[in-house]
Amino acid sequence: MSWIYLFVAGLLEIGWPVGLKLAQTSQYRGLGFFLAAICISGSGFMLWLAQKTIPMGTAYAVWTGIGAAGAFAVGVLAYGDPASLGRFIGVGLIVAGVVTLKLMH
Image 1 (cartoon, one colour):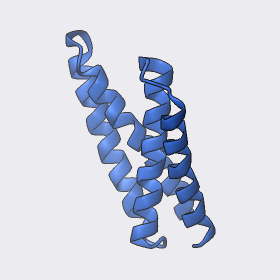
Image 2 (cartoon, rainbow, N blue to C red; image 1 turned 135 degrees about the horizontal axis):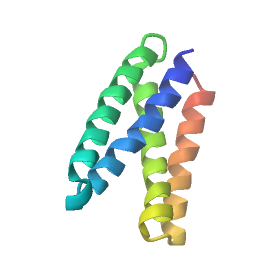
Image 3 (cartoon, rainbow, N blue to C red; image 1 turned 30 degrees about the horizontal axis):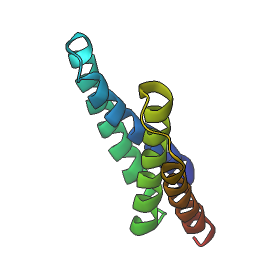
Image 4 (cartoon, one colour; image 1 turned 90 degrees about the vertical axis):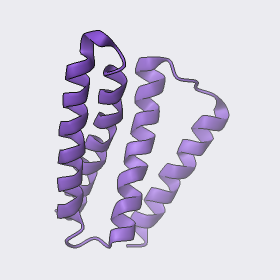
């Protein structure tokens, strides 16, 4: 169950940078800050639950890895962020590190 909590925490970790991006526009400022606050709170709570049985270092690395890769994907797909080969390789290395941590747990 802890790995499910950690996965959900990672997904919520994607939501707060998206909320902050939305808050960049005056039309969605309030909604963006609200989304960011909800996602930060939910992500932190789910990480707390996951750390009951998953070592802190592993949980934190997986959590940030999911958040980083997910925010990268949302940025590229929804906001036109650069999508160079080097950036994809970098995210691939993050994902490889997260998978290695999960397999070595």
